[in-house]
Image (cartoon, rainbow, N blue to C red):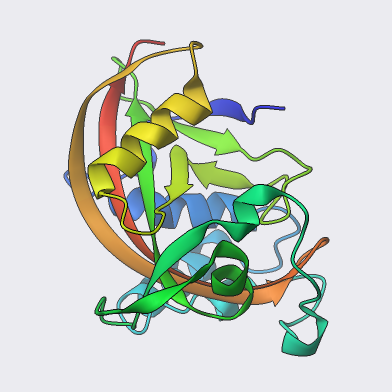
Length: 208
């Protein structure tokens, strides 16, 4: 049930600006049933990321807008019950909640990404497993994990590499690249998502 990794040429990423690889992910994800042109969507994302970080208008859900009344009950999978630290839009710690409350109720929390960079300079994107409640079947940037309650960022990114790659490959020389806060709301096949992430992005060298 692991997600599959796909290579994408690093020409998608401007020099020394790996933070924009997240923008590239959003653009690639948008190609599934897209109605905007690549250029228009890129401009939309750049405007959103330079503003309040809400990218919903750049990638509206084909299943309709977010509806808080349709969030439903906590799913059975134990990961949705994991406790998380909750922040305001500026990154100030406010308290805690479950992962489900955070993802379904617009609560800012932290997520880490580890972006695998191949020896030839390409970076790897991931096709999320179709059974995933959140963004199942869509492209994701590298390896990601939600940071749990009180968890150090370094531990979270190490966990992302271990859980996502396992023994299939190694990722070395992890270095923090940048931070990017993004929010998105909409209906998905299995849930109504109101996601607000403070993303901490790392890069690392992949052996294959």
